[in-house]
Every structure is written in C-alpha cells, then in structure tokens.
Amino acid sequence: MEAIAQLIAATDTGAADLKNANAAMSAGYAYGLAAIGPGIGIGYLVGKSVEAMARQPEAAGMVRTTMFLGIAFTEALALIGFVVFILLKFA
Image (cartoon, rainbow, N blue to C red):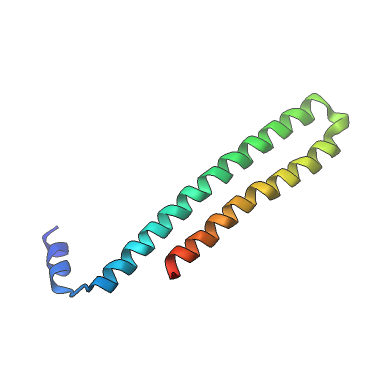
C-alpha cells in the first residue's frame, strides 16, 4: 500500500490527466450499466420464446422470427450505450 502511495506522490498528475482518468472511468461505468439492460432483456426474450415454442410447436417459425426481431431491437440499446461510451471517452 505504501508503494502505491509513493508512486502516486512521485507522478505529477495534472488537471488534464485527472480529467482524462475520470472520463475513462465514468465512460466504462456507463457502458457497463448500458450492457446490463440488454443482457437481461435478451435473456428474458429468449426464455419466453422457447417457452412459447414448447407450448405451441406449430407456431415456432413465427415465434422465432419475432424473437430475432426483438433481439435486434434490444441489442440496439447496447450499441447506443457503446456510442455514449465513445462520446464520453473522447469528448
């Protein structure tokens, strides 16, 4: 622990470096939060689709098509989160 304190004291971190470090940490945190929602949503969507296909096998084709559309729309949320991550990191 003392070595880390000495390393921090030895480095001359300016205000710009501190701002860049904070921006990188907040951007990573924001993308992590943005990835949780679509992950839960896709898991729920696929689970319910498999349940629907098990209950009505004759409608499996329509359920599968709707499931893939839902996955695409839900995954768009993760992509939007990634764009926000890039904007926060490099803005």
